[in-house]
Amino acid sequence: MGELVYIEKLAFGGQSIGKLPGGKVVFVSGAYPGELVEVNIISEKKDFNIGKVEKIIEKIPERRIPKCPYYRVCGGCDFLDLKYEKQLQFKEEIVKDQLFRIAKVPEEFVGKIQESKNEYEYRLKMEFAFDFQKKTILGLKKRNSNKIVEIKNCLLAPKQFNKILEFVPEIVDMYKVPIYKNKNGILKHLVLRYSPTENSVMSIFVTKTEKFLEAKNIANVLFKKIPFITSIVHVMNSSDKIVLRGPYKVLKGEGVINYEFDWEKFQVPPTAFFQNNYFITGKMIEFLTKSLNLEGNETVLDLYSGLGTFSIRLAALTKYVVAIEGNHVSVKAGKANANINNIRNIKFIESDVEEFLISNEESFDVVIVDPPRSGLSKEVISKIIEMRPRKIGYISCNPSTLARDLKTFLDSGIYELEIVKPFDMFPQTYHIESITILKQKR
Ligand SMILES: C[S@@+](CC[C@H](N)C(=O)[O-])C[C@H]1O[C@@H](n2cnc3c(N)ncnc32)[C@H](O)[C@@H]1O
Image (cartoon, rainbow, N blue to C red; front, side):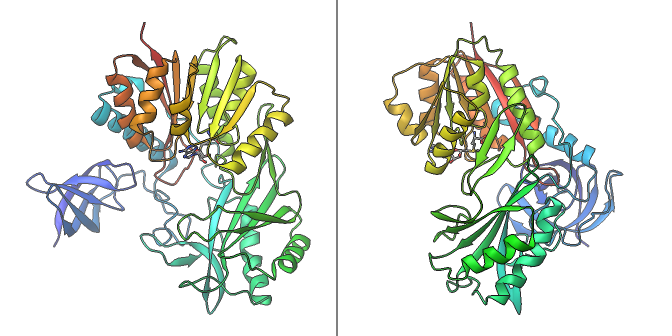
């Protein structure tokens, strides 16, 4: 018999936290706050243990039967066995907990989480890995492993992806393309991007090296077979760490996929970042620009701007926007997107954010940041504070680093918090996006 543990809360990252008799903290997977579970300890650390749930003794009533046969084998989803309303409640609690624990932000500052319109089939982009298991397969990484589990039907993917998943391995085998494994072979990933605006899919084949002799033939067959594929692209990427980067060749179509929001149009090239849930992205653009209470004469600095997801709307509502982005492809797309939308008051600069801030001498009324998961460096925060913008909008995909960075902004004594609004960009997973508005104290 293992230890009896009452689960107290969910941590950011999908693990739950409970206490062992005696009070030591234990982290487990697959149990939810309010449940009583029997746990076997698999690892002991100084301040906490890691346990494996052997038996759920008391379940919360919000559990449900997961609709996916790969659940808990595939590493993609964390909460398929939890009703969506409860996922939202837990995510809101995680944001409140992180902000209070790390930055002493009272929970009244955290707004209601914006739910996703669809809890399934919402993903605009998915990265599937090729593997060879007697025949070519496409799938996702297994939980806590680099092995691939074959996926024929992913609940988070638009239906269109599933048809492609069925067909692509057959064509790859037909042309006998070697799958990249143990440092040998060619074909690594199939990345699919979906646009609800056009009901179209961009299919991106990622290879280890430039050599992909069968690319044209495969693209011809696929393009003919699946009418909603509007672009096929070959990306050459020698990195084994990041899936989608490197030079690319367009094999079929225009090589961009188009999205339209209220009035903004976006062209997205294969290797540029674009937010992953169409409905939530629209809501985030709206929330950010409305909560900044713009008057029309502000100067705006948009750091980590990508291809202008927020910059385009901001430019329409202010004097001008300077957008800083490190990825060359995104900067080029940002310039194209400004043109397409007839926006003339944005300047996209290709630069590392920190390097830009070190040499920048201009002050801005509003600064927007949307950094990767690691959040902002101390240098970036101190440069922003030095600039004294009246308002700061912080778009975050990680409540822990957000809380750490907010603490630094608040400890400066110059900024106060207006609101932190969570957004459920990724239902069924532990990920939480949010937008925070800070204003300069009077
Ligand atoms: C989370 S994405 C946000 C993009 C954009 N705001 C959007 O909503 O589409 C972060 C972006 O920052 C860029 N990036 C990451 N590190 C950077 C750095 N040190 N300097 C400049 N850009 C960076 C990435 O290329 C990516 O486009």
